[in-house]
Image 1: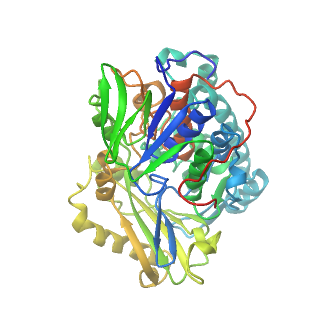
Image 2: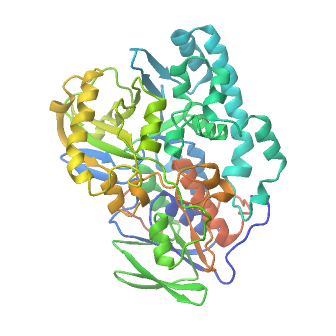
Image 3: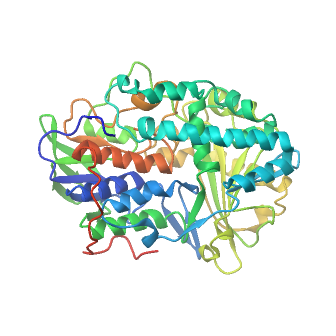
Length: 516
């Protein structure tokens, strides 16, 4: 971020951040660290946004992301105000990071430590594949080094800013080839290739069509380490809000933003359900359709945005668990390429599903009543642009829930439907109701035409002092990139950080509850 970038002109003393999700909280901390006065408005009663919390009969469900990688990116936001992530949150490293279960009965523990994973791959698929894994790991590390500074943690004003020596290095690494083929260059076992390529689904592109550069997501999942905050993923936004409040941020919970006041090309105030807040600049973190509606304008694009697949999520509190489940378990069906066709082309529900099951009580039993367990079951599904509409999900949801549980029963989780005591089912209709385009929480797909400088910009033409943050804008989808988006949005207001030493922490209050 050392190159010159466009910044908000004029006064920026007081910034209103709309939304207390991870992007908004990251922006708030970076703005505070740069000396700005910050007001955060949030329609919910607590911070977190999509990383929310549902408490029901002693079960504490995280309603958003369940996988936490690259904690140093979160710590960078805390450090902006002289604080520390690890002072606020106990992070528990997950060993293994995942357990992968395959339709042929094979099981693989996915370790992020090199020696442990090499030994596991050799046990699972033999010494030749273990050697391929060693080469793959080295490639992923080089890919991450090349991409992070220039292509991920970077604001773009023009595609010409891609023309750096790192672009040539990325090309030399094969980053512009296809992900599936590149992973296959290192690994022949089709099951292993799935473990290092399934992540592209959440970027909205099948591995056979995704750029190999997107393997950087696999780096985060399989090399950098996977962690769990004690108290659940919601502990992260809680801690960020507490740190921001202690650094002087003014939080307004239960304030729904109704409109933005303008004077010419500048936003002069944010109007909420509780009144008017004058401002010098605004950071908008809602999904793109909501932000564009508030701004009264949207950017011109030659092609309509394509959106990632959506997901059905069942949050289940159960009276038992199953030994084969790790903290995170990938349950793969026989189908693979056909599954991606269903999710991204034909708009059909998966006929042979691949599922993510997260059991947070494996690491933190206090998240459920004594002797009980939490299970988060995520089934990817088509978004509402190409699949069932939001209205259709009202009838489809209970049937699909039963279908997924029956499939898990067949895969070894015997009696899972009868074990459910408390539950919350989330479908594309719910995402649609929350304002997410195409009924997906994963926003715009990471096609080449929607990545880097081609992704919707965080500056909007025709408005001088509004900046966007969140998964719909730069750099994209996922907890690490959303945290970066808040940092990049703050840099549009303040200019790139000068990286001073941490300033002393001053405690002036608390936001959204005590420290986890």
